[in-house]
Length: 411
Image 1: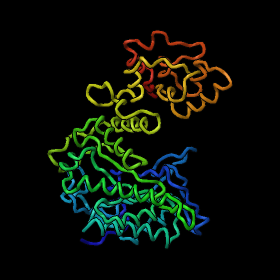
Image 2 (image 1 turned 90 degrees about the horizontal axis):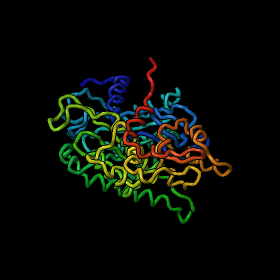
Image 3 (image 1 turned 180 degrees about the horizontal axis):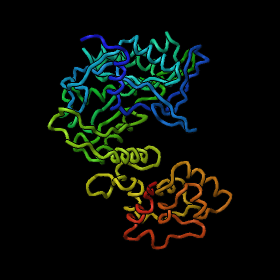
């Protein structure tokens, strides 16, 4: 095969990386380029076309080292049997691209993943070398996220943590059965063992050393993972069960959900159509409920007949409609935990409510000004001068809320 120009490699390997969703930087410790004498910095916010709190779009160079792969996972466009155009970056090319893009203010960091070529250790070794050269040779203090390979040696993964802000190991699918069926060359046990070792190493490095009394820097952004949604028949309840176990066992920062995308010449065991993107969105919302709103995994879909999230309404509203006996909640007297259960109220709005009611009682219109919409709130709260009466128990309440929350057409 003739050597490809770097520009063509970039077109191939950036396109091949688009299926990887786990590339945010939230939770990373801030690096200060003034201290290193180099360039670049990260502010612990989302990168790769995410938005910072002040509205800035933060971007990331997101590429594969190579889309050659020795594995033949049925759901992967880069599987060994796939008829796709292949390319492979050298270590020097990735380092040069990262620095050139940063100097032109195109990016603020690097997300590097790869297909496995020759062996997991060889591929992982090249990815670690990219990060090492950026940090030590180029004095690059920007954000680096490495997608680690579970089958590679613990020593390589430990080295990766010294240079990267975040490491991630994909569990691939929600169940072991799904992995064995669609990615038979990968072992769920190996994936979990690598995640456990990474968690242990992070905990070790988090403890202050006896000599310096300082914590060693090791993947300050933690570890994350990604699972494909819709490639097998696992229900949303099963997916959330898997996520809850991962959060509890490995202290992950994030579980990312990636809707399965049909690929050319795919296996007959895969579905012909991709799942609705709204399913992916609802899973993220349910995941948020577990992480920030005090919901346990079983109660999110408790009472659901098919174990699937309602695509028409968000998971918190669906839960509230199934548990109307808990409502209405007095907005002026309820504690924070009860307020977190009210549909339409986010954590920031609740903080404002708690701060405001120290000085005066809130009316319905006051709450509306804080959250910009009271369509979901009306049936579930009591406020000064407002009580929903029998509205909470109205039979057609779900459809009424859906209609009131529909976005008006611009045309």
